[in-house]
Image (cartoon, rainbow, N blue to C red; front, top):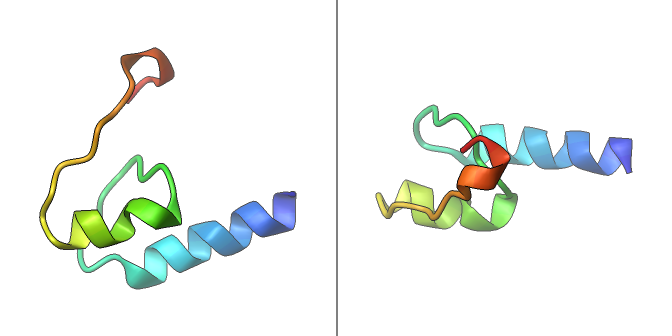
Length: 46
């Protein structure tokens, strides 16, 4: 699981157009790149 999470982090960094902190998953990177806001849960320090 640790290796998979590191690959996901690397994929997020390589596909983001501009730096953004607290990206929850690779699946929301498209929305972030289009300029859409993402829902963040206050329970998880977002």
